[in-house]
Length: 328
Image (cartoon, rainbow, N blue to C red; front, side, top):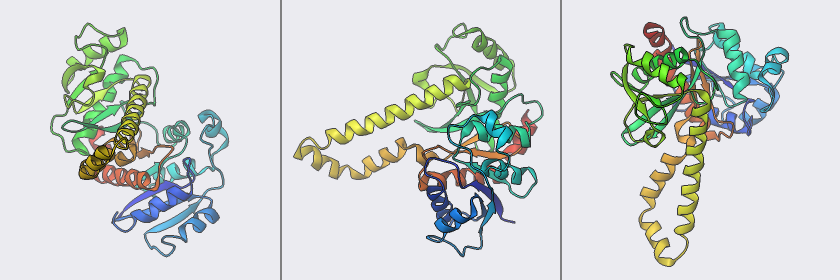
């Protein structure tokens, strides 16, 4: 039976055009059935350009749209027939195996919490983001769902991240680190120090604290922090990657010699650009809820949408949810 993935077609800065294009382009190689949720007329108009007759792509109507800057509480109360809510509902009823949204992250999370609930033993869900490192990839969580966390919640995030690394990335005994201002166990605020003590006594492969400059060094497979720190780290990394690429592009245009060097180094530069591009890593998994939910970037291009859908498929087929339930 093919994996069924529901996509919020109306979510994101470039929806529905970019979302529909990404979904349509995914059907050729994905090996899954896609369900696009939203304004049927708009979706059909966009879909006609790509794969209007694709048997593996269908439409499920939804009458409302959650604005990108709308309050999650307001959306939860008044937008029950929004594309994000309806999409999550399909997973809740067992009509889809995973859901993807590039829309309002707070509202999407609120719908997931309300309709799917959290895994037993988990107080909160966390956004688990796959980031590049010197020896592959590292899972960072929480990347923005929870600004304030108790030590016990950070320990739960470590369990979630470890299960993700094992199930989806096939990492045996993932190395778990706690993002902190110093490597010593005496560093950090009281929450982090207490979380450190809990992780030392846990069954996880805890390797201690890691500083910000070690996030990409390959010293850990899973890095745990609260959503405030995680989101700041993510945005700083995105901004620095963009700045470095802009500066490099400018430097390579300054002289004939530089332009010639850029031409000779084109394959390496193309690889570097892909490594720094957020869209190459697709969406982030909302771990801890009773369903596979993928949060995409609000500025997702069709390529980023395709990657987010691939993340959803891989996560659903890897059995990450069942793995979490066994590890809790």
